[in-house]
Length: 424
Image (cartoon, rainbow, N blue to C red; front, side, top):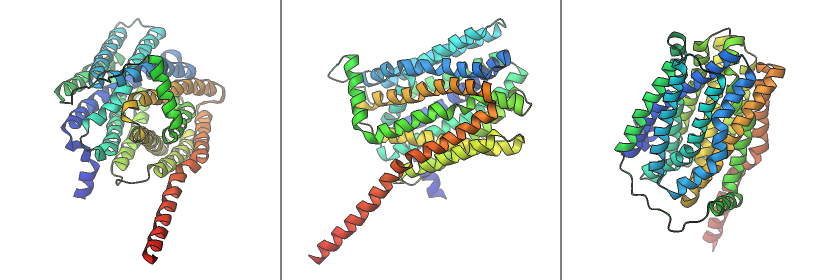
């Protein structure tokens, strides 16, 4: 048991990563409080599933538009300094949201405008944040564990943040949620300032931005181990992951609840995600992540099928937990595989294309699912998403199982070679 515990948390041997994990844990709780408050605020004002989709679109589509410049910035400049800037900017955005909410005279378009601002900030934050973890880890064998722990931290926040947000929304209002989010950024900024990272060494050759973009695209095109799973991420982000856009509808209409109910649904999904994170962090080195990815995509799809039409809240939450497990495991494994197979000099640009696949497709999917829900109802919309998840698993299963078959064949060939050598 002790050895398992050491293996699960082995990335904490790196002091910089411990600081990063601690600061981000607090900040992410605030982030999830704000996300929950924004969605509930918009739905309470409009009672429109389409407007819920538009809200997600406003907060994430700018990340798609500006993720490529963000990736180039992450490759050209100090990722550490870039992350400091984006965290301060995110804190300012949260302060503006709090001021707007406390004014008691706000419009939906004002909330959407500030959501666009956050999406723009994230376009530069994500390509810098993910590769920076590499610089925090001294033993690169700990990298998959660090990325899995990263996900556990984000999803633990997803467990705690929405539940807190639901309670605060009911008792104190959205302004307090936004204010607490702004305060949470103090933790991550402090942790960054306490880190001792290697000095940034700028690239000797400076190229035009267009040349670097083309270079990144060609690299992806020629690296099938990255491009295929990135395509899987894009399809899932467009057609399946936006299911959480409709959760306010389930809270208010299906389960006859309030903001606290919405927070609890998100928290049960977060619980499943935390369990998934711990599961991934506990995997032994050398585990075939692509097979785990296939299995978790199937779990994700099946859980959405059951969740979509259940009206008994406790049973529905069981499948909410399973959907969180499948969703988080799938996304984290894809991110891990992409970072492991990426060249160090291309990592920022690769992550910017990942951000495009995720932040580009997710907001479009949110608009799509919001529109479909208006026509078919939220339960049928999520039912369709579960079916699509299973179809994606079926389409990509051949590729995901290919490496396992190749490894098995390679072992068999090696054994045959050894036998021949012994005979010689």
